[in-house]
Image (cartoon, rainbow, N blue to C red; front, top):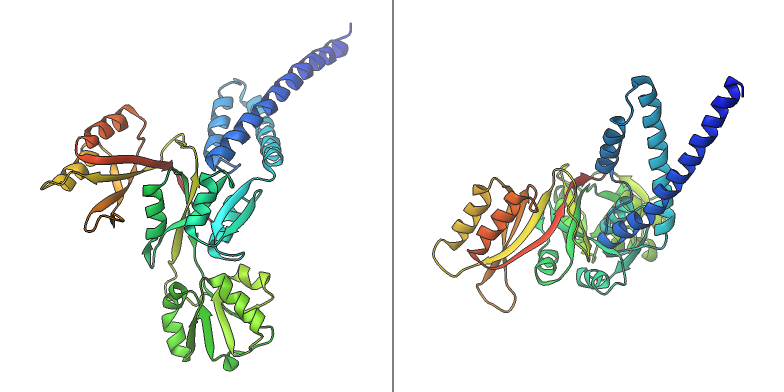
Length: 361
């Protein structure tokens, strides 16, 4: 056998091994896709892909060949993502509102390959996941301008779902009008009360009257349906495209830093690899200093609290539960020790989720 024939035989043998390894790798994507669907996780996991590249870089000693091998692995991960998306077609993501609402925009950006399903309330979207009708829900938990979304936090406290991701969506409010309308024609603006509040300075400056809608997307629908040239909506640019409106003026909200944090809720908990945060919900004993002692436990074990809020308990006047976001791994030995100590001061303690936070572009 000539040298070239021998080399080609080695390549053919290596190709057979690669085919078997590739088949096994793709077969494992079934379990990965099922896990991500059950836990409400997006297909793309940049942190995991970086870890895969680092692990594989150590497998090849020759630095020149290593570079080619890493490109090979990058291609393999691209095909794996495509296969996962194919497996996940038909996955459903619940949100509250209508098409074009900011929750709908967030759901589409977080899960671009799954089907968003609209519900008429936070409770209905949450319940759809709890009973298995949808795979996960994307619901707002906090706005930088208006504060926490108490209804959703209460669902987290009373329900059985877990938060497996938090995504920050910058909110830019636009002035939407019927095609060809000029600003001088506008007499009234319609939107959700929060959006009207965010644009209060702009509305006052222009002397517009105000009309309330249940959300910004419904406001845009109303303008399109009425055909009234004197009526404008305050909503997103995506909403304008959906309802055949034009963006007359952009970013009219008073605060350029207006951001809403959306959480992904699913039926199963998931602890991300690497640095992350976790959610705690708890009530404390009815004794002097109980809350202070509970908070001190978290800090004493080296966990940094980034949020602490109190919420009234329904059916128990003047009784409260507490919501904490903290940085660190609650499943580590340090985290388990912290939780064990914390239980000594709490009547109820619930780890409601683990997450990394992502800014949606």
